[in-house]
Image (cartoon, rainbow, N blue to C red):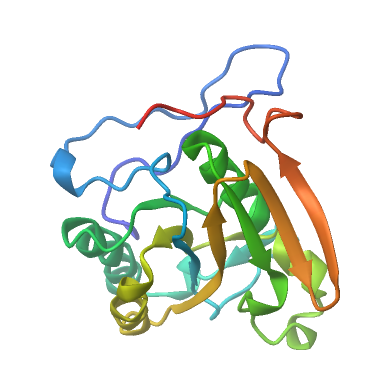
Length: 211
């Protein structure tokens, strides 16, 4: 009832000793409006869109719960933004932030796109961390109730930001897609290599998917 659909969620678990799909979803969408995760382009801005108005869910310290604190109309309005930016071709690729957190989800997108990226951790938006008794490291690992990783041409950033802002969500450019095949993070004067997709196989071990 909250999301307006009969089934929500579903993904593979590549690291289990057996084959499993939690939930499979079948639906119909105009192909020209679908946002794929394997179509990021070199030079794109990496954007994060997230609802910062929430709480640490009492059942799981790595879940940032905003969806249950919103009305059904508000939640559906946030989802509808993705439909609108898809129909307007405002993004080149996108993926909802899931269990791997912000950086892991971006890694999944880059892996299947055959790309890399440099990310500025200091640019990642966050709620008042002290008010929720969490650290910035903790925040980066969290699974938000409503959050997306997007790649887009720079001239579309403002339009994307306005659409999400009207629905109570924050959008911030946090880095740039490149063709290195490596995901590197920067924080002030420090940097670290998170994934080299040519060596460790990435997050899902799928490799680049043909565009």
